Length: 142
Image (cartoon, rainbow, N blue to C red; front, side):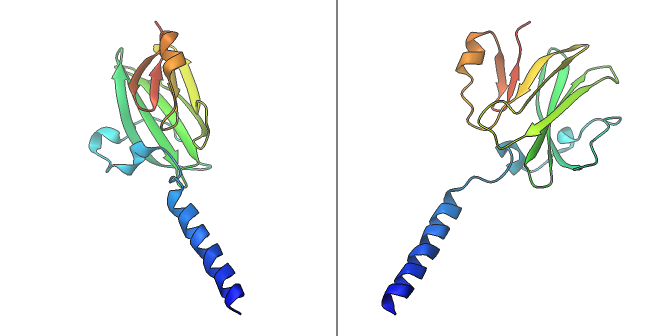
């Protein structure tokens, strides 16, 4: 009988240990409180399936504001690039729980931009001329 309880307690302890070490879904930027600056500009058409529930301003570069947005469970992350003084924007979405880049966007008036997961090593991209403006945002060479 003691062996059974020992096995159950050991399994439960292992589950707690592993559960405590796992990272939350999504990007760390969503862990902070949202501010007015984090709202996507009016006119941005958001996907409906799944709907986006959070957005955060990441950085501005070359007159373009860059936002990260995520779906409810944090498994889907989007990058939205909005040129200043324009109603045009570019956006793309990808799985946030990835080891590589999540999504890249570019378009009229928008330099190439890439959303990367937390802790992503950007050394190779920076050697190639990409700029790291924020922990999750790279802007392509001009």
